[in-house]
Length: 115
Length: 113
Image (cartoon, rainbow over all chains, first blue to last red; front, side):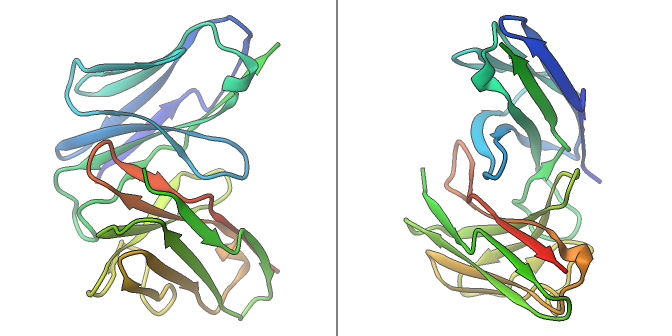
C-alpha cells in the first residue's frame, strides 16, 4: 500500500527564516511526486512535479528535491504570504485496486510565517 | 491549465438526505477524479470517472453511497447519499492533463447535521 508521511505537521517561522519540509514515501513504483499549496477554503494549487531521484525544481522562494525515499520542499527567506498548508502526493506505477491514476496524499504541513 | 468550477461551494444538510456536487471543466479531459478531505486528514481518492464508462471506486468507497455520473468530457457529478455526520468533509474534483499533472477545483464544504 502506498504511503506518504509529511513532517513536521506544523511549522512556525519568522519572516526570512529558511527551513525545509519533509515528505517520506513508500510506493510500488514512482510515476511522480507532487507538491501542492492549499490555502484555507481553497483547493490545492499545483507547485511542482518530480519524476526521478536527483531531480530538483525551483519557483521563487521554493525548491523541491527528490530522493528514492523522500522529498524536501525548501523555503528560502519566506514571507507571510507563504503561509499555507503544503501537501505532498505520489502517483504510483501500480495501484492495487481502484483506479490507476489517482494520487496518494500526505496529511500536509501547516506553515505559518510571522512578520 | 484547466479551470474547474464546483457547485455548491458549501452546504449544510440534514442526515439521511443526499447532495449532488457538480464539477464543470473549461476544457475536455479524459479523466476526472473525486477526493474527500476530512478534517485533519489527507485528501483521499474516492473514485476515478472516465467518460463513457463506469466510475472506478477506491477501497472503502461504494457506488451506492457515492454514485458518480460523467455524461461528457467536461462535466461530472458526485452524489453523497443517505448522509450522516461522518460524511462532513470537503469534496474536491480534480482533472489531469498530462504533465505536469493534476488540477483541483476549490472544493465543496459539506456539513451534515
